[in-house]
Image (cartoon, rainbow, N blue to C red; front, top):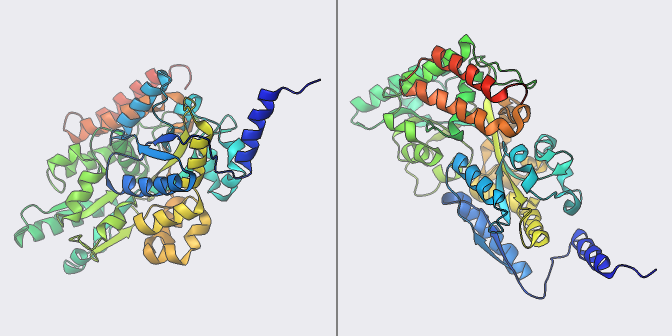
Length: 422
């Protein structure tokens, strides 16, 4: 019987990819990647994407998504619903694999087993129904940034509880304002009603012993006294140790205030370190990093993956770009140049990586004590769960509800979302 020639040609193409082919084609193609809208993320993303392009003969372009993760996810879902080929390679938040799984290519046949070199927990997070829908690009956890020079000036230790942070921020803010820094604040963070507030509020609640909103078994746990206390404490910061404008802050707004020398403490992700230490940074050499306050300390686990849209016109070529971007070579360069946390454990022992980011050597404890958002338990309904949680937290900080009222209403809302099951 004669072989099916189209099938043989298809098999040959995929075999070449698995053997490490650069997928040279008769005609170069353009691959659209969602590097980001601005900042160091897009800078380091495009730098390496363009290096891949120079190597393969293809071209890349940045598909600039919204800054807000919430708005970014909404855009993805809109494009995927239309089966749009406008994006080939997409950035995927840690919380999204279960939400976007039906629209992403399974990378396992193309990875050549490289996923075994990454943190197992991240690979497990990115594997849905046996399909590897995203390759880990960098991982994250919330950190406390502080002005070590100012703590030394005022004789205060790094706080280990949220109550200690509140008191230290108040004392140092008052003292610095008396010294003439009229716009100095004690604490800046992400309090806009978006996914970033979910991360912050989860750290407050968990750090007060209030659980994780929805537990691993899918039970709604947020309606408790500790969670209410955590939200009430956060509300007490607004207009006191934190500017009222923090209610509209995302990561970059908080970093801008802190980097300009106008805050004592900042909650942010590890990416901020490289920017704070740039030669033109007003706070270069004055910043320390610690695990977040709390008993226990709890940092929300974050990070981003790269996936390939199932609607890409060039899925194999897009997958080749993903494998290049998530490689040890690129992750090491991004760690050294941009303080992006690698997803490859071996790089945490790399001398050059540690020399550029001394704090990375101590992140094992932070990751070990991290708290995950309830994505696995809530599945496709997670975006609704997160939106309900950050809206509840925002209401408390805006003075429209008490913590007790907010967690009670939130429990009722989450039961409506869950109904019989997630």
